[in-house]
Length: 363
Image (cartoon, rainbow, N blue to C red; front, side, top):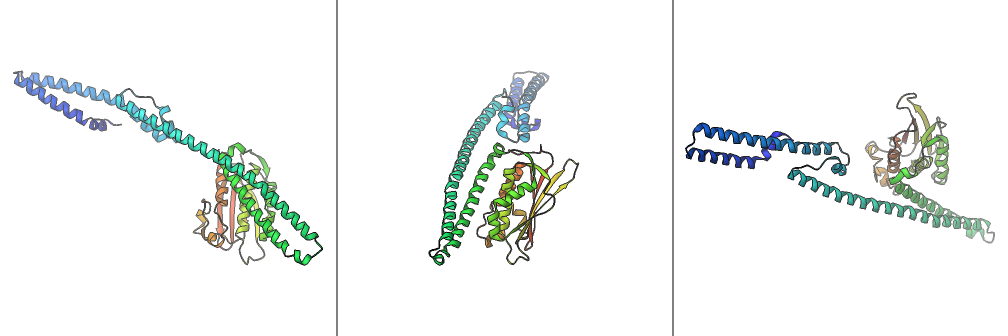
């Protein structure tokens, strides 16, 4: 707060003071007092008014400046009342009390929303675990039906057409199971720090685990995984979460297989160590496929939530959640994400793991 703005805020009081001083001068002149006496009295009154203004300015200046500076520097303004003292002048006290009331109301709303989100997340996790049981039971029943069909010697020609249908149902169940797993990891991503354990893991083990978990999907899409160089490098991360992220990338590859792909659809895994010995030393894992790719216009937005782009109009099963969830989890885990693509040629995602196991983690 500046003196000029403070004086302007006191303009009504100053106007009343000027009017009273003029009235005082008139009364003293009428009463027969000399000009020098009148000037002296008015000067003393003016000096007293200036002292009152200056004292009032410095009394309020500390509070308003502290309020302004704290608001500018705070990320969470709900902490404001705890960082400044309640002032002694009435206007500041009224403003401070109003601020406390607003912050209390905001804190109550935030606490209520957090409670709601926590309850909803717990419900989703419970639902996912419950949903897995009937899916597993259905897959087991289908497996038994397939075995019975294969063993049936009474009328093999009648049973034979049923086998592809049973396997088609099993594929759909696998797809449902993948969506259920995605929902579980999405719900847990809000509180990832509760289920996050950083250890050194060889990339080859986690890549192999992701391929194994999505083997049926890759086989169905005709995608061949290729393990390249650098996969013996170790990275500091949580293996469960990284395997899930790699699984999302594999599912994205299987979903966007390019029709008429020369040779056959493939996905390559390569890793390399960069800036060794420097502060920004890191291991980069690149997952690259020869699928339909992404247009240059869509590439900057592929990590946005729900974005499917031109490919989403062709592939109706696209949800726009897989890559977004990978980027979201990577940010929380302190892992960088970069995408590259050429439409009709390839699509790649590069994950960058800091070499320091104490790297930043956003809970």
